[in-house]
Length: 294
Image 1 (cartoon, rainbow, N blue to C red):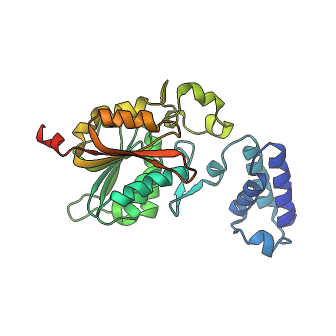
Image 2: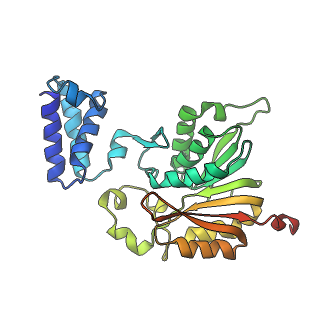
Image 3: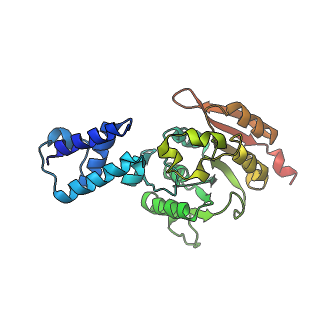
């Protein structure tokens, strides 16, 4: 079969399975299998595709028809201009989360220390390290498999940050931990994209999300606010006075999370919207006076 013929087979199969972006997914899977780029379909539509690649493509189409996310099939998701390795142990990075990273970068200065709670693939922390200078970062996650994925991404994307310096320490580390349990020290910045979907809503999510992405990275408890409360309850021991907190939120959680952050004693609490005009990030500054009372 030719490249175009195989693409049309894929598009038809995925359309029949109700995949919203059937044409795009069919093309991306074909590029993944054949090692080609977006120009191949236009430039060389009559290029023959070998039997092994044809077989592999049809296999991946079948898995996509069963609603396994495209990114878990290709193993890669783009985020902040970087290609992150992903698998079913980590949440697939979303474009919305780039707003969170951009807000941190606006306030991040060279040499600051960053704590990323629920790091998953490491996309937030690694992006911050990539686009800053001489910062130090610690990413924590409850999943040992997620930590392994984050470490692999760090070695690929910011190798200079994971190399040991003369003091035997790396500027970027990942630790398996239930939030602060294995975290020592205090940081200039705490950032998190915690689970924030109310438990009762999980069943209504798209099957790609509901059935394949890690539930513990999605489920925020009965009202979706469980992890915000947990983060705020222990933050006094781990965020310096004058330090900043950045939290990704659901589109309807701006007021509720802002109130929790204010009740925890933070100043300059604000909500940042995403490019669709939806509330996306809550941030605040820990009072400098907080350190004086410790």
